[in-house]
Image 1 (cartoon, one colour):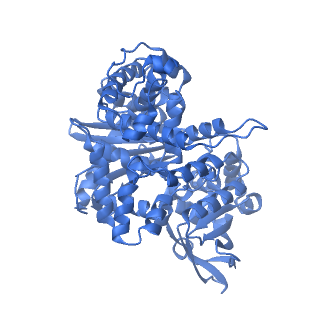
Image 2 (tube, helix red, strand yellow):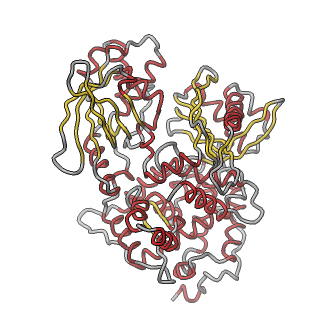
Image 3 (spheres, helix red, strand yellow):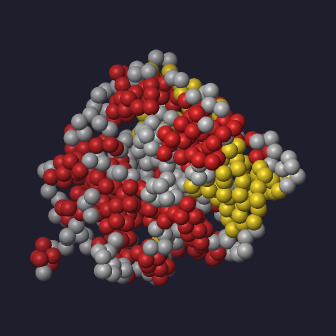
Length: 596
């Protein structure tokens, strides 16, 4: 697949999610891009939120946002969607203008001037109040301009807003394609140590004894690591199974900060170091004539994220910190395997064994669990009712692309493969966990976000001691796909109905459908038809409006994305009174047949 094919597929995806009368094509596109960025670890749990207005002479725009769990990192998104069908350049003035409009919104929020200008009943008012409240504690702020055109510049100079540095980036269709085709965003990261350190890093290089990896050990200057974090930010840590823990606490990060401030020359003696994976390494000669690492491509820190981030944030908070005497021990693994599933398993194992202080991220380490292996096997053996199509369960990140590359060896074969297994029938591990958890009437858990929901989902699958957990059957797989189809069609229906918090409304509406009708819905009919009936969708639309009203009336002025995480919110929504379901829904079994 080339860029043109990818653009065509993306636009087809956008248009397939639009319904008659939908107003915000940009919001649909923004949602697709933001979800992808969250899936690969470039951002947190994104929330679509369309806002466009003029205050004074200033135009303001926003398409979405994402806030870290600790409320110390913020991403804002602004969409420039043109609906083009061929790769088309976007003038730099457009991307810069969009970034400026988003920055103005942020500036007014930070100064406490935005909320007062907004209707208190609107979602954007809740966001403005939240940003005003957390702004002083933010350690990292990024603004992303996302577009379906091709931008010449993917990064702009950082801007200062209220004494904080705001990084400006462009996620255009070209950059999105690069992530999709490579299966991992780390391929963007090329680090030239002769540039950041002045010389190749002295190292001990050990060629691998198998086909999986090569190995090197080195010590990275603290200032060089700080510069890398300043340039790439959290993208350096995307494969990391542990997010940066705030240095405001009294834990290990506070200790790192104290060492950097009081005894920088002892940092290497006190610190366990970092573990890096990379796709390629170029060896040169260091200053003493020995082996040195000139550059790394696809560098990612899979252990030691807190050490790396602490270097950056400590220097930022205390400019007099002397990093020139700091050295950070580093173990570097150069990946050689070409199999995406094998690579994910190896990186997961490296991360799991390297990280001992904190819990690892479940979705990075669960690919080889029997449940996921069996669902993947079923997805490759069970055909849709037409006998040709299949659903694809992506047990390992990038395995769908690997399938296309491995079996689509000619243009004709690739066309047939993509027609039988289109991206619209691809389900990831976190997708499936979301669909099944919502159907189990736990929308508050879904609202916690992909990773936390996945953690709870995997915990629910864990067998009791001494009891072997049964593996899913063919019937179970078809039921899962039916629930996935119902969730996705609900999401597609709801997206244009509300300007913000569609994800929360979707999760709660699906949970309500399961509560009210789940025992009567014939999931096998949805599998056989590979569709949800218009009558059931009409009922879902009716209940979605009622759910949205209850979510707002019970939020207590908080953002819906936050209040929806609370058990009391779930109790209030699920216990509320709703209109009676229609009697003409073809998926519904008769009450008599259910009793039998």
